[in-house]
Length: 172
Image (tube, rainbow, N blue to C red; front, side):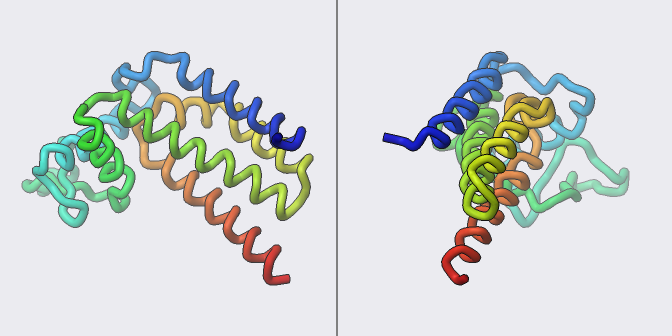
């Protein structure tokens, strides 16, 4: 049986995930910055179709105008490559696949934050931190609806925090 604080964390996680899942997961991007999400989705499409590689990613929005090859000039496209891989695995190039990947990254981020903070500070701090993270409007939006590489960055940041607190606990 799980300890009472971990059960409370599980309740926070499940209710937050339920809110994220309550919006139709197959809706196209619809927010204040759809251009960035459309650009991300386009890179995913080119990976899915085999028309580009992680070292030569292509996008639909050509910036600057001299970019005649349509190369993607933002962050390394790890998020886009992982989503395209999930689309190939599930044999579906659909919005819900990207959101499914986001829910997995949310799970990694939430539990990494909870266990890392519990280990480094206290159970109370871990519950407050994970509750705040799960219920911030930006968390609900980015991990629930956005097709955006920031979710991977946040998940990896919290996973790193968790690993750092684990190493610090066992080395001292």
